[in-house]
Image (cartoon, rainbow, N blue to C red):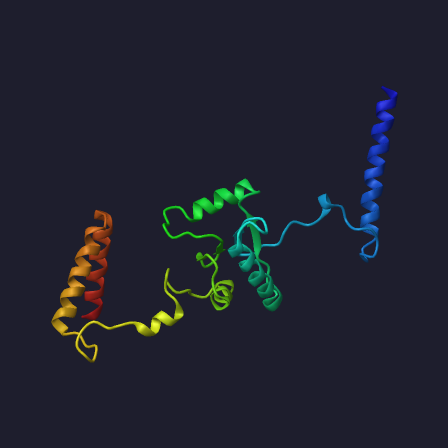
Length: 197
């Protein structure tokens, strides 16, 4: 009994001495801080779902791009290895749930909720890291130049066609509303009409 209590006192004194030593050496020139006393990771909205190096060429290419982006913009991207971390795997599956187009790797921005699938070009990844609006799935920036406008040769639509399309669109949207949402929409229309008078 006496031996165990003296051993316990020695352990407590050793821990207290280590804590005091760490607090007194605030210049950082002494021994490195133990892993269990290190600060927690800082918040970053950027996730990079990946696999171990050498497993997929796309992930390795994206890793190089992310590293250069981190140096260039002084940002931090959190890497989540879905083969080694079960929680990362579950989060990845939740993010791509119901999405038929989900090649790997995946970049996810927590604040803008935008995703970049597969090996993307550097401009798209840079825009993603800044939280900018990204083009729709499967659309490249070059595709935006090839947009065609329905209507006449000058791209004009007739007024009657436009009104009919708007009415059809509104009817389709009303069909999806619940009864309470419909009443709210009608009340808003009444208030808008009263405001115009």
